[in-house]
Image 1: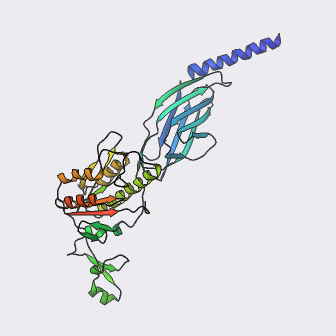
Image 2 (image 1 turned 180 degrees about the vertical axis):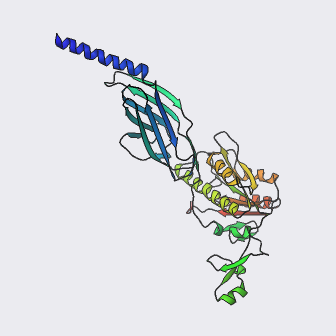
Image 3 (image 1 turned 45 degrees about the vertical axis):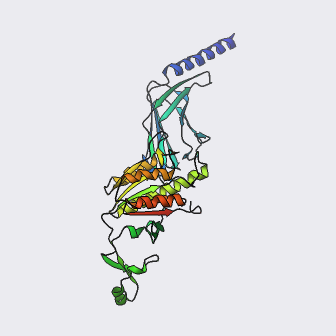
Length: 357
């Protein structure tokens, strides 16, 4: 008889704790998720912090926090964390009465894009798994990832103009008639910039330092087609090549703006899956760099028209310095550059070879 009484009592206790968890699990329970930075460059890390506070005398045997994350948000490994297929982030908690638990995760943002991290599902369960209670919440946690930094010698990128070769990007950015000083010769400097009187005085090669042309309005145009006949979806390897091109465009624009000149950006990709192609005209404002980086973070692998057709949109403008970044050069692109040159001050091509991307 005593065994039956013990069994009934145990069953009653288990049923009671199950009922309590189901009815009161989320009352007085606070959960928050924050990130250390809302904007980063691809390849950089952020810190994601979870804080859960149990502000009542109720013991929660286990709690599971689930959220869907991108495969490009890579979490560091820890015992109380599970990332299934790098798609679902799961954190496990045991909550004592009047206790607060803080979890800190290091997350590497691998690729350019926009990443919401605040869609959550919280599940509380009892001691023996008789049942659970679940609740969904949406917190305003968002990370915008800019194109990766390449740290390339941007001024020395070889360019091809409509009427022949251009030594490097600096030739589009300086006034050949005026210079502000001299410095020692460096590899890649043009022989035409050698200052012979200063060279004679110092005994070492000296070159002229040109100030940037204040009237430069450089429009950087990125071609997401990797070959003239490309259309449709991109493979993972092709997406990596496109990402390199976007990063290159971002670094060129940043360098030009740092010189005090105007820069803009346009691309044949769309802003989101159903958006239009971006067209940010050249400006020298302080906010221009971030404006363009935000635009780049929103670019989707989708095109509405062929690149040669897209270039027609630039025919409506005049007197810009156009720099096209492309993985190929064909007769159609050359003809379109000649057409653009009749309306703009200069039209150049930065040809990114297959080996480089």
